[in-house]
Length: 421
Image 1 (tube, rainbow, N blue to C red):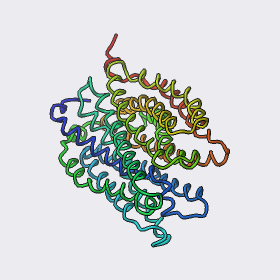
Image 2 (tube, one colour):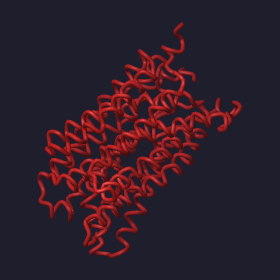
Image 3 (cartoon, rainbow, N blue to C red):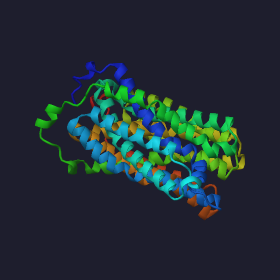
Image 4 (cartoon, helix red, strand yellow):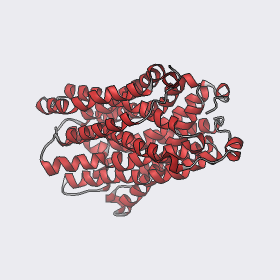
């Protein structure tokens, strides 16, 4: 990959790309902090479990369209540029968040309400699936060779920023409003906050310079996707493992309320802790991977994570307090993020520029759709089916082990390691 264009990409433009990515992830993941309240608004049922499962199922519906978005918008980015693809996905995400925020409840318009919400989630999923590939490719191509890991993990760090802001908003709303008010309109405020800043995000995206040399890629021989199927398979396994850890953390607010009977304000604080750890350890992961290589940064934290998950959950169930819940969140989030951020760099570096956006977006979206989108639903069902609150811990442990095996099979891609004797 040529880094000729690096000097043309200012830090201001990198910040703009990261901010736009963070806003899209905030709009998509805000749903997770209010799954119970959204279920009560759009999926009323005599059974709280049925209402929650329908709400989580709708959250998962947004993941079904992510591979399509990754393929369609990602391929568009490889043909026409990263910037127009990011602008397109941003506009689609904005439309989805406005529809979610403004749709009347089931009590007001009946069956139309959940149908509209599901449609909005599908649009959001398509948009976010199309955002990851171009945004990651943009950051990688905007960086110098020796800082490629750090720049690329800014995409992952922006997800942490989104979770941090979402968690702070959820805590503030849960603390300021009664349970009835949080259910009736409080959760909508979180979505509207995301909608308010849409025009500013759109302006930032429109001002970005392009990093893909379109003329060069149009005239160069096209790479064959079939030559990179091994990369795609290992990428899905690594990212699928990582995303189960991420969405288990997103599930913790629901788990803490439904299984541990904690207050919404305490449970929502897990989002703040997770977001902070994701933000900090993503950047640390990228920085360190530029210095010692990608594989050690991926593998060592994942080994530790695989070992500590079950003891941490046993501790939480034995002492179900806010302090233990937040400590567990911090440990799992730090270890998972440290490993996962480097995963993304490796996959991006293993793919040629002509296929990078489309293939990376599709790999990421497929992993998220099959593993991340189903994680909360599967874990809630496993708790109910087994009668054990430990079910999420075992599920996460198996996922971590599978991802670890895939990490051993990928090559080292860091220039600092590849160029060393």
